[in-house]
Amino acid sequence: MDSELARFIASGRQLTEESVVWGSHMPFHVTYYLGGKAPPLQYVTSVRAVVFQANSVLAVRDAASHFHIVPGGRREGIETLEETLRQELLEETGWTVAGISSLGFTHFHHLAPKQAEYTYPYPDFLQLLYIAEAGSYVPDARVPGEYELETGFVPIDKIRRAGLEQSQAMLLDAATELRRSMGR
Image (cartoon, rainbow, N blue to C red; front, side, top):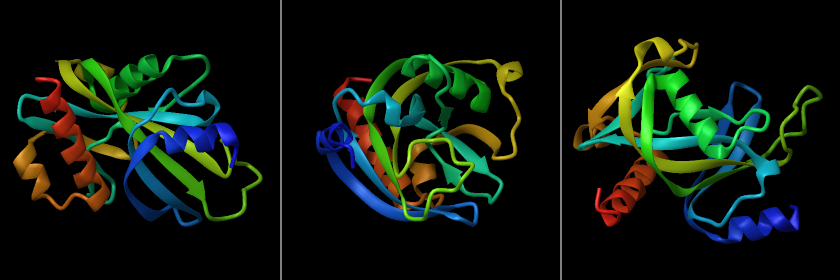
């Protein structure tokens, strides 16, 4: 692992880790961290946020009928991290956001050989995690996709009972605590 990336990862506080497989052929070891200094941008592939509205959190239902609470998307070109976050949240959910604050990051480590057509950092990459407050809903801005089928705000206590994956539940707890500490 690159020494700059290793220093950045060491600056975070590990929350949890898991193994995941994207599609049928991309296995990863995934580690979630809180905090962290400024990331080495060449490893950041996407940005995501836990978005709050009063005592509710924005939940996204995917094609497999799973819920997740960290919508966002890929960083493109010379966009700043905040520009990417705002644009991706608007396209995926239809919501604008305000009060963006850093929560942490997710470190992905590939467990399979690099595919010839793969154009992203390999074998390690990062997704940055934020918290934000919902702004206004702009339904025409939402770009329907094959992955995000439905989005909406769900009371925090209800989403906790909805069967979130352990990592998602832990991120929700950390985001809720950070939000509380900020007086929101």
